[in-house]
Length: 304
Image 1 (tube, rainbow, N blue to C red):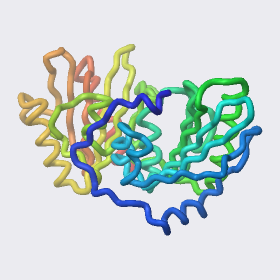
Image 2: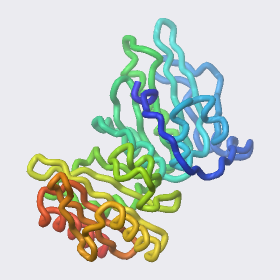
Image 3: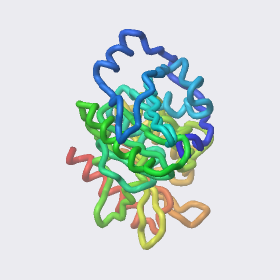
């Protein structure tokens, strides 16, 4: 399953681990009243709970991914039905709706199935986000009625989450429509290591990404060719300027005072700053194309 085939992600610098207290666990249980039965599958009456310290006991090799999105805790329930494969529901508290969206977006590739605030079903795995929660529902193997039951249980879990929340505001800055945005390619993240997993920029953290920065990576199809736009919001304009200087020095040193540069692969890279946001285009076929995409994003920043 895709959930268990994450690449091993090594986060160089993590926020100090903070366990989920009994009080926080109780609050989570009060917030979400998970179903005890769905489509004939019944809860086995056991709740497994993991926090920032114990997440590796549950997801060895992929825990870093959740920690990079400010993961708080996860509750796991197993549902059983005679003659059928067990179904597992995982409810991840990501602390904010923005990071719940982020963890969902990082692996997104399938069509939305209308559950929660964004969802997908592929390979027997249902993934969705709603409010500050990211949820996965899957069966321990295939079997008749299983996929239908996964969807039913997913809808029940989504309904039990009463609060919704906003997606990251930075996403609204992405040019869409005629720009050629590939919606399912949008990734929201904080870490340069995660950025490199989706689009390699540099081994070093030349963009100075950290837990206080927000980054959105998106792919565009322009004349059937892929172009990437990276937007990064920093806490302050001076930090954005320092990051832009760092990026240009390492990635496009020949650009000097220019915004755009043709790289060795004959593609164009463009980098500019608008307020506290850095805008970078990778892989444009022409300088004009890179300039056009950045201009569209700049206008949307100015309107926000």
